[in-house]
Image (cartoon, rainbow, N blue to C red; front, side, top):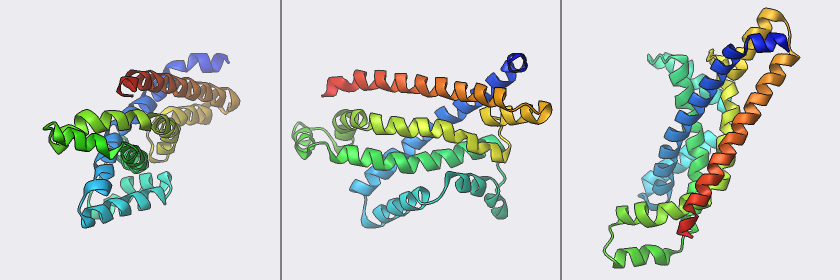
Length: 214
């Protein structure tokens, strides 16, 4: 394990990029999910069809293919992206589709009477969604969304195919240099587990904080 200890800073740098990609993709993916979920529930028929098609296409194709299309395929249209932005864009689009279904189900679980009561008290539709509906829906959506987030943390390993030096690629580069496999793979497995456990803890704390809306 001495060889792993000697190269921990390099592995930690890879873990940093893994977390960076995950957090930014979570942020933008959540924004996409919110718009898509509302579009599917409240949008005009053409908007609903577009939102439904987006979810169907993204959920029906592998994330790896989506990453390759964003990085390599867009070149055919004159769009050249650096590996890191391409990875974030692809993962944001991917997680947005999955989260939109989670959020849509959570929104549908809120009793309609709460929205009607909010309108009767003088709140606008936007205020009702922001102050009344979304806080409750987010709490309901946290457990399944947490599984999606943790799954995406592990799926960041896929961006190694477009040369983003995240955690897995950091290990692969060291393995290619020293021809030692098990110590490096065990080390990054431990790092993934620690990061996943950390995300789970933070999501549980967030869920407890939102329990005031119950």
